[in-house]
Length: 377
Ligand SMILES: O=P(O)(O)OC[C@H]1O[C@](O)(COP(=O)(O)O)[C@@H](O)[C@@H]1O
Ligand SMILES: [Mg+2]
Ligand SMILES: [Mg+2]
Image 1 (spheres, helix red, strand yellow):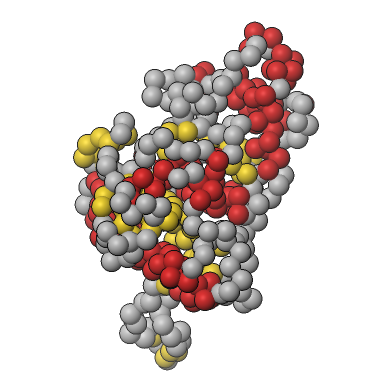
Image 2 (image 1 turned 45 degrees about the vertical axis):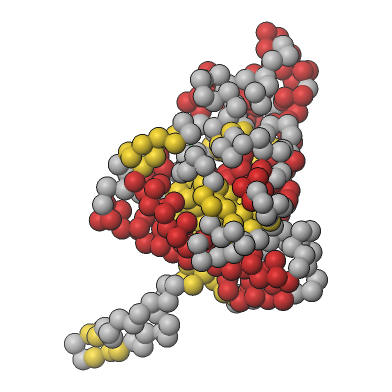
């Protein structure tokens, strides 16, 4: 198949390439460090995928173990965090900023990179056999005397970003700033098993040790500009700002409403799975701010959720905002900062922003909504 290659081969080719279109991925040494870091993250992903695939056989992975930064921590969150830190300790990484650790984890003082990570995204789904994943962002160390500060660079300075999905297919979505690629985990035996046909029927040959490598089967991914599919947790409707309510109302009105087309809705409650679907067939994802205590700045984390997803989506031709502003232009104030997040097909992301900025749309639907409707607290 055209364009088929392994992750390792793809990365080696990229690191040796002279035409390097990715803005900040300058020197050969830095690119080699990025390659080693991505391979370490892929290795961590293999171990986490195995744990996820075992379900309850791996132990009580959904058991609540504590709380970190306002979110519940489950056993699998902590195990995934430990696996990631363990694998990155062997990579040129100075600091890891993880959802599961209040403070950045210091690794290699001479490391040229920092990694921001959500080790296990979609924790609420662990016991339900729904896809979960790992989201990562790779940035350069700006000041070696304070590498943790480099985690707070705006998202457009990411050198690479991506996420793993542990689902029916285990997949790695990756951008090096030159488009977005999807790699699937290949665990087929190294050599094809010969079919042995005996007189009494099919005889099974002895199993071979499976390989485990990520393989790209497709060309770079493109997010369709137009879509008829939106994703939002509708149970929060009464807490939304008017701009979000009117946007969703318009979608729900279908061909009878101002959008003049029927929409479908999907909500997996697993950012990685929703993002993967949008990469494959378009759509728009919304997690706005809302009026609930703890959600006035949104739910998702800017540094290790919104930024890497935004880079992946933009590099695939889509858009990502906090409802109004480009995610990648926001400067994080702290590691665990939350943000509203709207991403996916260009037309819909733009439309959400119009609902926020065009009072005429609101006035048209419900005069009482007036000028409210801020997406970002
Ligand atoms: O349960 P809610 O409010 O719908 O939120 C779902 C969202 O929260 C998240 O689970 C947050 O990620 P974590 O599981 O890493 O905390 C997203 O994956 C998902 O999109
Ligand atoms: Mg998450
Ligand atoms: Mg998480």
